Image (tube, rainbow over all chains, first blue to last red):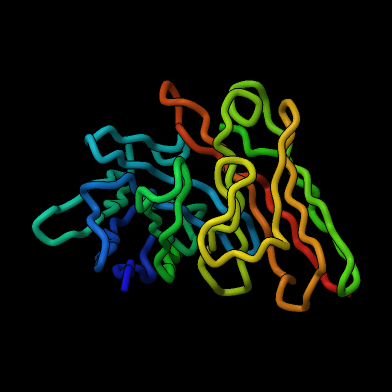
Length: 119
Length: 112
């Protein structure tokens, strides 16, 4: 079964750091392009970062310089390192992947992990 | 990275059809045939229902269809069923020079 499982969310003070993990099974993170998408409470979906299989990375302007996307092929896991967190980063964070079956679309998703930035 | 524009809400009775628009620019929707649509039920992850403007992934019923004209893409849900009540988001590829994907603002579909 193809599955993505996110972990690492929680309550963090403004200015703090968190690392989200997205462990894949039945699917190879390094062979496909991946994204982190967030959804603030009651709001829509927003891409935070994208990592291509070749290693190219992209960041939304709102997180550029603060967030870093990466992957560990040996663990088949995608990461999102989040530094200098702000209240507006509060959201459910989903990892998504393109399995290669459907061009330029994300057909595999994790269940999401909640990040709350508050003092 | 401006979000694509969708109507906030749409509704229809069971068995009816509802169409949702998704308006972008020539740099995203109009420039590529890589519009996808996602269905999201409350508290759940997004689910891919349309890719490459009008193609359906395996397992998605043919009640869901997509199209595009110029800078506007559309999703039509025919034969509405209670389980179709959800939020729907379009997404477009926007090239590799800038951030390569952008979501729409989302549309809440209510089955009356």
